[in-house]
Image (cartoon, rainbow, N blue to C red; front, side, top):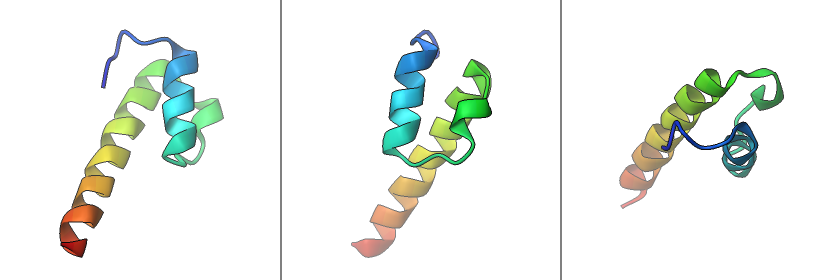
Length: 49
């Protein structure tokens, strides 16, 4: 996750990952939420294998 990305870019990523509450998050919160969402996605995919 690129913390130097624009907030708009981060919001787009959050939208694709269906991060709840993304519109009210700060840029820092978005980065943290995207890290969590990516970790959860990876865990979910690993369990499917």
